[in-house]
Image 1 (cartoon, rainbow over the protein chains, first blue to last red):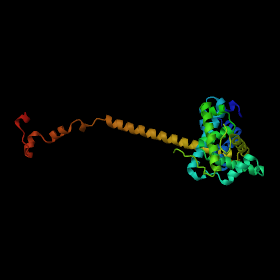
Image 2: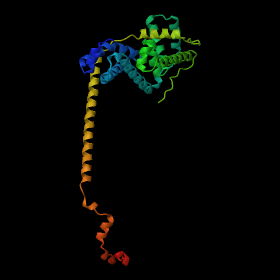
Image 3: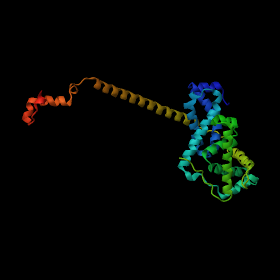
Image 4: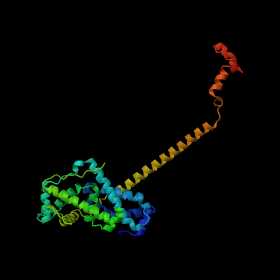
Length: 198
Length: 110
């Protein structure tokens, strides 16, 4: 926990200064997580503000301060998911296919042949975002939380409120879909954004 | 659970994800972050307050209309005490029916 339980309780009681401190303590982490979840730096602050806005209006529903962090993560996941869904609806074409260059750079990234570190990281970022763009929002968020954010299955259990086995299955399938997307691009086939139920 | 194809395998995918995190480290908020957040909180608070007031007005108006209708129903009205047939009988007494060409049997008049 980045803050004391008492601070959360004060914020719950309507103390604006306490709420401010909670936001200041968590905003860096939340901004980073959202940046990796949505992959669009220009909208990260808006989504983070939506998370803290939801936090402000639902803080009184939090019964035990011990579950504050998973709960904040759940708000983050939900806000990111809403953003990705809206974004997908707004611009279907944005879910870009993996370009030939990205596939080549992926090989370079895997083999460690990139020239400069910064350039290579940029390519990795583009590649991962393209791969994550080719799977559903749910898969993207789950994979990012587990593989990029490094959350444990226990933590994910609290966020998703499903048991460990179900999570393992979902993770395995999500990974397979990402690997398949890469393979399809590698073989020159087009990586299509996944079909969604309206 | 190695991927059997010639693309990425699971280990490479893990490495890619790790590098992705390095490429996108946690970031600081801009100076406007907190002021904007509080502005949004206040805007929503105002909207909620306005909606609450509108709801109160609506409930009050609905209650007043209900009371008005209840009062109208409770007040007795003379015209509804007699039926349509009674009103007709009163307007056209039996003795005047002959002038309209209606003749009654003796049995009807008894």
